[in-house]
Image 1 (cartoon, rainbow, N blue to C red):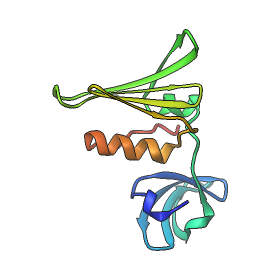
Image 2: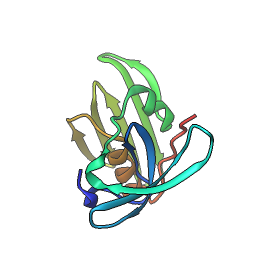
Image 3: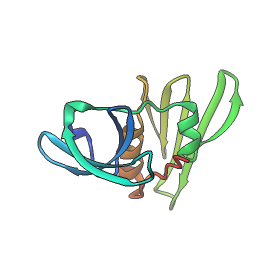
Image 4: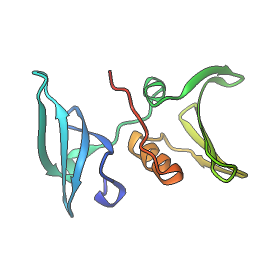
Length: 134
């Protein structure tokens, strides 16, 4: 993983814990996570100790996607309806993310990750993607 691909607020995994990025330096990423005791822990690690969180069906629902049964199987969708120049639809099906931006279609054929989705969502509409972890 490259620190240039990250931004503050991204969710990653570090040593088996889901963590939220709070600061990014050249080779170090600082983060917070909730300990098993219920305390918020803040620390930093080398960027190579982080792994992306794959966007699963369950995580799609936690990101606000709705699901329905499509002709190819389960389909997860999320839309943002701003003014007529900013309408987006995200579709996740069979580990492929398709983004519809007005008249443009973007396919991400590899397994998408949570931080990639967060970055795309923020870039398109300027808002953080809300993830309900519990």
